[in-house]
Image (cartoon, rainbow over all chains, first blue to last red; front, side, top):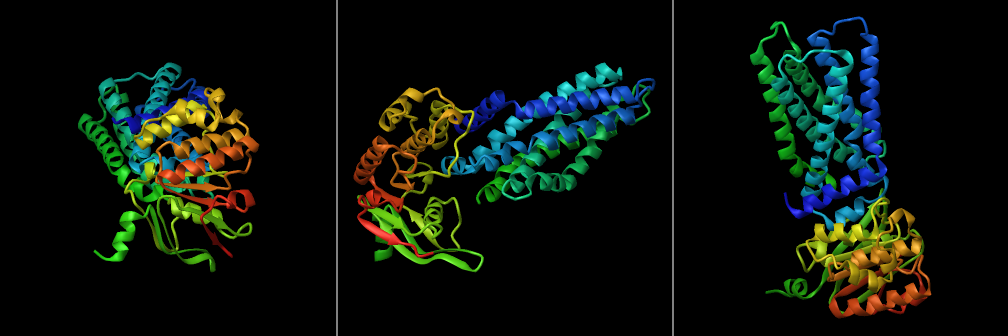
Length: 223
Length: 204
């Protein structure tokens, strides 16, 4: 990682630590989601299918709510011009994408701990869960960071980012559900190979979107 | 080698057939100018004529509708300094952190103490931008603009929000920049117009 990317990353951390906008939004969202789920399923045993679906949806919405902010906030507070004057687009993309990845991983871990703790759902294959969580975080980060960059200069940006994210994130959600339900499956009812393929697919999607991101970002970052 | 190529080699900034329109209205069109070391261009015109837009086009913040701008240096991050009233700073970052960030992104020495002393903002080193007055923000933006020792300095209404001492600072900056490169000022202030060696009026 070069000094320029580190500088953008440091700026993102400093801003977040002082304003706590993204952290507060995502933590509240995660806590409310898990508490609501655990209340709704109070006297039920959650199946692997339901557990994987609920966690994937929670991760998806946490990503859509928090990640585009890093791009959109530059235009909203008018600091985009300052950054355009002094930074290379690829450095801005990598700095913000790495920050988003860290943020997404922390959110994923918090959601996991809360979900497993509140619902009492057992984790059959923690290693597969780890692969799927890492893959989901990479893939969501790559896709949503780019969506944020694409809509940052539009007038109706907050609504637009949700619409634009759907076709990019829907295949990811399917993959996440496929992988996570195998990770939650205690009875061996699902094919482990399918779960591994889904986890691998998520990791590949994540790497592809992050690797291609700087090139796309260079084109959309200019006014 | 033809004369056009020579102009690019020796000039700091070359604008050819530059035009910008919003919808069907042209703010300016067919602008041709070249600036070298010591040139001070004042862009004048009524409010809304397009002075700030021209500066943003030169800075590369807005694409021109036609024509192009060429800088002597390939990398505008250091060779171009820009300061404008409507350019925002990061509210939660301190004065020091702003200069540290821009220095690292430009890959040039941050020169924090030197620049802040020059613009008279040393006392606010650790103050977040959200707590700065308009004049202090203007001084910080000037420091950021000067950080890379630019070939071309673009100042949009530089005296706006500054006190008498601040206006003297502008004169000092203009004089120092003239030794190093060119300067473009968007202004209607008669005092600032005095600094100019050339004037370009935009009718809008």
